[in-house]
Image (cartoon, rainbow, N blue to C red):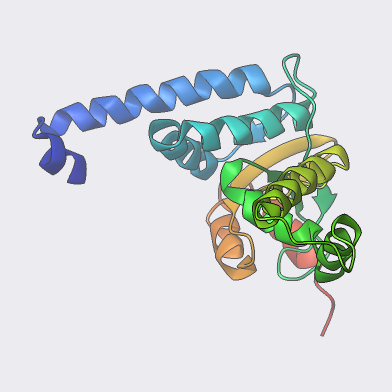
Length: 209
């Protein structure tokens, strides 16, 4: 394994470490889930995050807790969960989760060209002398105001938690790859045997040809 090459530890150590990490993730999930359940695929994905990217892991768990109305759920600033309408994932649901890596994309989404132009023209009228610190101030304002506005409007976006909703019960399938529905569909198909209802959800939502 790569880790054993890096750290020089016995091979069996990493197997034991992985089992321990999975157990810890399962404990966290048991506290977040009220009525829902999850796939083995998602458990593996979350375990990888738990080991290597705790901020990423916590952001996903926070959104799952919100979806489940768990006792420790906090207020979300991301977009509400919604039904996917576009093939090939039609019929499934998705919920955004957010952490710092997604700030630039959210700022671009908020500060469209006309908004930036309006802000600059309102802040520095024609004929005003351009202060030396103007560029820095504009950059700081655009970042802070854009981030705050997206959060207050519950419009923060990031990657997806993809899930199915059957009889008011959520089945959490996979972490989605934003902008690549085919990759996400492949991950969903890997869970067909574990959750057979996924076949009917996906295929019944497709238009007849």
